[in-house]
Amino acid sequence: MTTSKLTERIRKANAAGRKALIPFIPGGFPDLEQFWTHLEALDAGGADIIEVGVPFSDPCADGPVVEKASIQALEAGVSLKWLLNGLKARAGRFQAELVLMGYLNPFLQYGFEKLAEDAAAAGVSGFIIPDLPLDEDAPYRAVLQGKGMALVPLVGLNTDLERMKAYAAVAKGYVYVVSVLGTTGARESFPAELADALARAREAFDLPIALGFGIKEPAQLEVFGDSIDAVIFGSALITHIRETGSAKAFMARWA
Image (tube, rainbow, N blue to C red):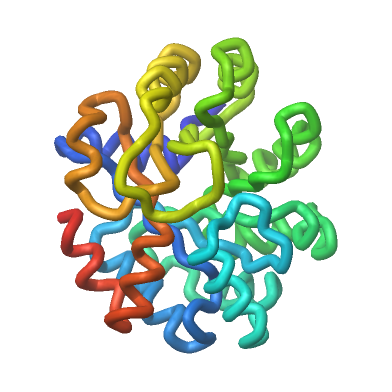
């Protein structure tokens, strides 16, 4: 089994002595034109991987900031087809690896095999599907891996070691550790249970560990040391874009 481009990209950042940077932005946010400008700014600003959200009307994992941005994008006319066509037209322009993060229903409506084919042509290296449980993901994972893409697992504070090992047996790319029990959104502190969850993930997975949910500034990461390899930020980035109209300055914080 070959190593995922996502794994390689995070390991490369770690070899350079830093955490890999993984910004999240909903496709089509804040509008159909500015989205592409912000995507390019994230890429130019040092993102190692960019998670592009596929807006959906019933997001179970999204907090108010991401949900509002996704609804705004849907109202502007964003669709999965629009997003894939736009990425395909720009394939090869981005230095960062691209991951699509979205819910299963729109992907099934699109047709999963066609989705994998079009995503691969658009330069996508992986998928995150929060409402697709491990027990049901095998056929979808096989389709994605057949096109060279990873299905990135999500684990959390309540994921025990046995379950993490089950994920690890089939996972590729990186493991997304959710820092809280709840939805996305910037927070002032992390629960005490997070350290144990990260320790279990390190024991179970031979993949980079990316920490997400609640991250808004680099100082928050100091307490984690070598227990994480990458950091994912979404709500804080979206808020910054709303307030300043630019993703560039936000990325500069993490340089």
